[in-house]
Image (cartoon, rainbow, N blue to C red):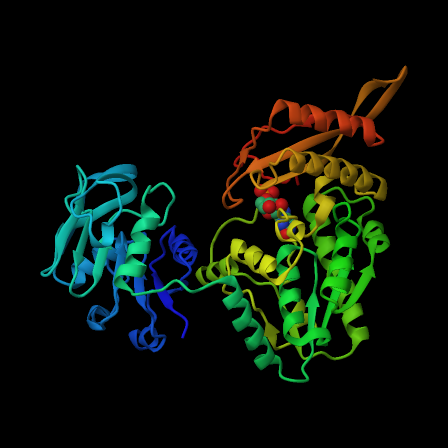
Length: 512
Ligand code: XMP
């Protein structure tokens, strides 16, 4: 039976990170809502339960509470921040407003470096973010860490294996945070850490076979991106050519990408592969369109229509496969009210439009980096698996103004040069996203003895953890110089190169 850690989510900013840290220790973990009934939690037979942080105060009316019987169930518990305060309150301790709110890196003094805090520095820099704190431990607990402002920075009931910390071990700013999580998993929860990607692949393949049965057929929209490619490889391993992949080529992919997708899925994973070459249609419909949202809308609409036409021609299939990944699942469960800055090309409605009720989503429980690791385990090419993110509308939103096949060629060629140089400088794993933009600006230049009036190419390169905020990458000048020289020499109609030095916010990563 697979070892499982359940994380009860109280709405903390870092809950997903807790799950990632646990999985990095090769123990499978899942995030579930804080109000999941205790019986459901116990039915999953978890090795341990982690209570996350959250925005509420335990004293608020209607603040999230759990059934205190959890603490008597013989399952080790780790309470973090709100999870600690809730544990203190439910077990008879007290929680008070801190004299000074602690936010950011704080030095925590560890008073007991056995057990939970084993291996951590005696004065360790930890990430704190709290207004409330435990002022008196419940019976049976002892204090194992403190800060200048927080007398109970960690407490433990060894006998019941209930561990609590006010700081956040899951964030990388907590220097020995992973050590603490490891201690919880391996010293208290008795985990062995046997969760690997090949174990995951085996289970996922068996599950797909069971769902689809001996004769069922599956349809997949293959974009060539990491997620849909990994789904295709996994389902191919489960059911072979009963998987049909439809690849709509809108003519706005990066250089060589379309051929690579065709090669991989006709040779390495020989699924039933339909390539729909629809570039002419997309370019025709984008003619004269300059507004970014309108471009997105047209591309999304055309994609659905082309896909539908191909799917209809194939006849009835039983299941529709999708590359939904865990952050999508967690986020859709929480619902956000964030303003729509860009309507991302979204084909989520596709299965419904095609009349599918049965979905196969084998990556639903994986984070992006786990999807990549799975792709490698399955034998997909490294350059496909480690691909940087690429927007659904493709190069169309990297061409300012009207999109034409000629402009697509300029941005595609310049982008290929930029990617090549970044890779040969060994920076492709360090810069999270990098590409060129065909700005709408033309400028005067001189080439040979001729006056030119050609396009300005912008280089965009960012470092980011989550793509919600980003910093511009400090690329070496020599690299920028090489890229610039190559672009103006090798790409017809590119006569000037500029480097974008704007952070997000206020700019976005893409230019449109
Ligand atoms: P922005 O430009 O919003 O980009 O800062 C954040 C991330 O989202 C990608 N992006 C898109 N992805 N369809 C997509 O599938 C889109 O329309 C789209 N627009 C931006 C962008 O490449 C970056 O990774």
